[in-house]
Length: 135
Image 1 (cartoon, one colour):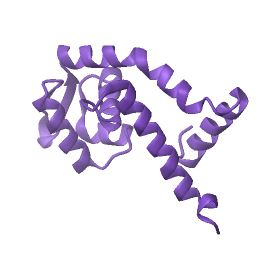
Image 2 (tube, rainbow, N blue to C red; image 1 turned 90 degrees about the vertical axis):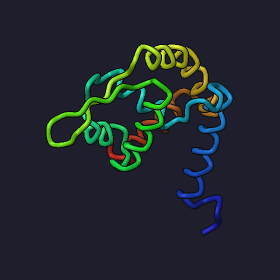
Image 3 (spheres, rainbow, N blue to C red; image 1 turned 120 degrees about the horizontal axis):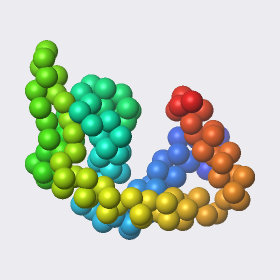
């Protein structure tokens, strides 16, 4: 099978495009994964770290490392729960960072999907959700 027909290669290339557009829109202060965590914490304040990892589709070790970095930036607060779990929530600085990023998200994704017709954009998103078993 030619490389240009391999799903893994095409998904990796699409990911490269998405990350590049994300960096163009937001700079290097926040990574796409950190943005996903900030969004999840905004939508679920006080969530425990294990549940957060599930929501953003990361392993718990990676989530803990990212939480440590976001805590060091002052963007999240962590509180100890029973059974050594941690509750996470956004700080006012974290809310401000997320609020500043959100207006640039839709134009960034519009640019990413611009080569596709609107119906193709919807179909791509539907197929990606099916592939990663969301919905």
